[in-house]
Length: 171
Ligand SMILES: [Zn+2]
Image (tube, rainbow, N blue to C red; front, side):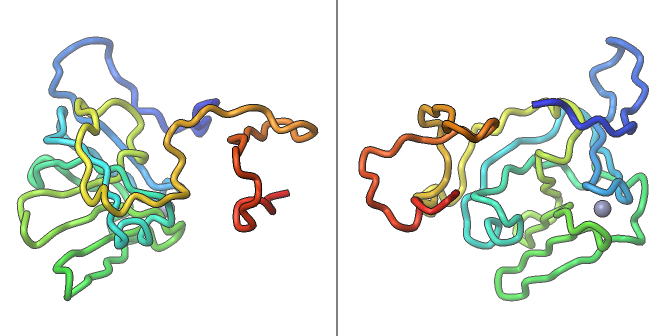
C-alpha cells in the first residue's frame, strides 16, 4: 500500500531527543494536532459506539495525557458531539468528517485519538482490546486471502460454505 502522498510531512532532524512531538491530521488536512512522544497507551475499541462513530469494524485509539495533546491547526473547524448518556464526547472535522478526539468523563485527563490519523510512530503498540465481546463476525481478522480471478487488486477469503447470501453478492 503506497503511503499517503500529500505534502504534509513535518521536517524532522534525524535522531535527536525521543521527546519530539508526533503529528497527525484529518483527511482534508484542515485540522492538525500533535502529542508529546511517547503516547500513554494504545488500544482497540470494539464497542458499538466507536464502531458507528468511525463507520468501521472497530476503532484503534492512542491515549495521550490531555496536557501532552494540542491542536496545531484548524481548531475552529472542529465539531463536538456529546453523548450525555455515555458521558463521552467525540470531535470531528467539520469539513471532511474525520473523527479526531474521543473524550470520556471517567478519564478526564486523557484524550483518545484515532491511531490512523498519526503520520508516524506514537511510541505505543495497541496491545489492549475493549469490548472484544462485540467483535463483529464480518470483521477481517487475518484469514488467508487469495486473488479474485478477473478483478485485479481484489483479494478474497475463500469461503468453505459458499451459501451465505449476505456475503456472496459482492460483485
Ligand atoms: Zn478535515
